[in-house]
Image 1 (spheres, rainbow, N blue to C red):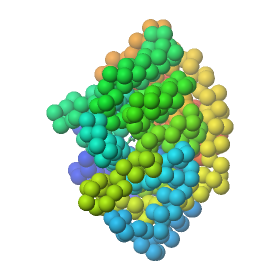
Image 2 (cartoon, rainbow, N blue to C red):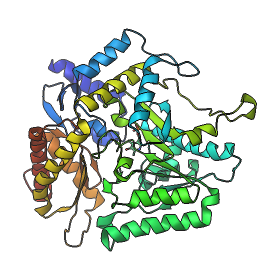
Image 3 (spheres, rainbow, N blue to C red):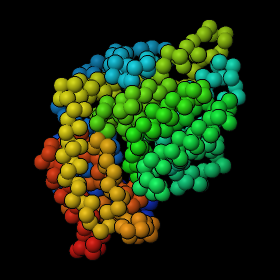
Image 4 (cartoon, helix red, strand yellow):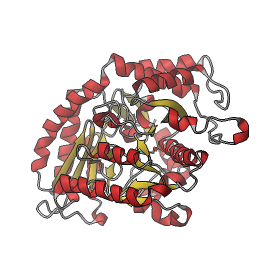
Length: 453
Ligand SMILES: *Cc1c(COP(=O)(O)O)cnc(C)c1O
């Protein structure tokens, strides 16, 4: 057993290049190798179990190795694993599209599949661009994004993103986007109301002066994830959507992280009754099982492409695995479990429980801000609570807290100095409590000079 594991560890170091990972750090550390999952636990090759405290990077809904989801895949596997969606349909892709339209904000009527959040975003921006082109408004080509936005890692998605760390090297390859502030209440003088006003007025100004050259605004509704789980003040999303409508600019809602119950509603847009023109979903769509994403849009957008062959309005985009039947089958089973187990209602109750349990952490001397929307939680650690002075980035405080959490039996990943807690939506109160205990102890140990500091 140990020899096999040592071999695996050696092969991992020799042959694998991990995403978002400095491999030198990684190879000098003690890499974790997962072998299986059980409920909300992941179990490594040595038999040690860890809570999946970040839902395997924000994907997981019903836990791992779920009999109903497994069965949906094996049943579909007995029929066909893959068949193209290029001009040919398949059964689960059709059934899933119908279901998605049923649960999506009203007015979204068409589903375009892909295989990751980034490809879904890529489709959204090409769709928005060509929408105006097909309507003869060829000058509407630019995009507005929000400060520190994350929309994925393909070149188009990075171009409409706004995290300098992911952009700098590639700057010459990117197309420029307009950037407006995202309301970050904790780091805005004047707090939530002023932060909201700054974002809205920046958008208003841009639209009043430049709407004629702008195709769309892309944003992460209600919660901006990768920037540090930043929650919009109430009403902000709705006002931004109204401004876009008024100025004839499309709204693209990137619900890749926020969709499927994560924020306490099926989609974050539901909190403010907003129907975007384009909505991107991924991550929780398959319960975190298989790589399926989708870009949903309105009849109005779809109809701008609907024309005779000669008019050349076709949307030339697609992937080998677009509409993959196995992925669509497990997504259907996922949505069935959402209904049967009343997952979205459950998230609201669990979120309230979690908020209550986390309140004690707010007293700690280095916990600056606890941000929560549903079961999407970020804990911002600061060197000085009074002045909100951040830690030195070289201290890697978030990283060390997460390493400590792993030692104590829970997996998560930081966003800089923000410790992320995104448990699978099915986590029980007992499990939530156990995870919050680990989180609390890890933060205290690292920021208050506990044993591992
Ligand atoms: C994760 C994420 C993406 C990218 O999705 P991938 O499946 O990793 O390509 C895009 N947008 C948001 C908001 C995300 O959180």
